[in-house]
Length: 296
Image 1 (cartoon, helix red, strand yellow):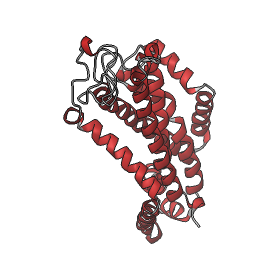
Image 2: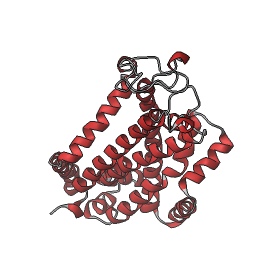
Image 3: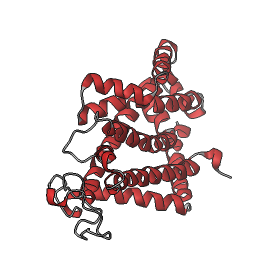
């Protein structure tokens, strides 16, 4: 029992050391700061956005950015084909991208953790059923799979979260299953089992706290992928519907004017690039800090 009781303290110590390792990676910390900036921008969008994102003004149709000829500094990044302020729509579009990304990852990671724990610890027919289901889902290309689901369910915020989470859970499931297969044979798990602890207690109180680090890293990495998928579905008209601002639909709106009004598509595309790049670099730093294989 002493060994099992000492493990949470040891895991907490390792977690703190990993956080310190992450803090030493300046590029990763800077990228994390960019992600936090986007999150704050999404939360305080009504205070940050200079204009109503859905307010139209045809007199400002395709108005160029503020520094260009014919532009106004009050409309810093210009206006779209309906005279809506692009900067304000990008700010509000941040809400959609981050909310959908976080919601999908939260739902998928929760399901993946539960399925992975059950598969890796219980083994037997439970492992066979879950593993075969994971293999089947991995056999479908993610974007095509999501497009098919959205075509059946119809566009909408809730539907896009369900469509993306429907397959996303298989990634954390495989990670948790692999970690559980290793952890279930360790001494402190054997000690808890010998003391008569239930399967649920062992999985949730002994194994799960000690395998969360790789799960956190994987969830962070996958969030960038989910944001790209959401933008892709919105670009195709299967995601969030107008007039709600979405980066993918904003890029699609500017396709017809890409030569004479490049700013309509370019700035939303740059927002996607910056956020996804920041998440990827930050998650790379998390992987280097939390994965012992990358420690000297």
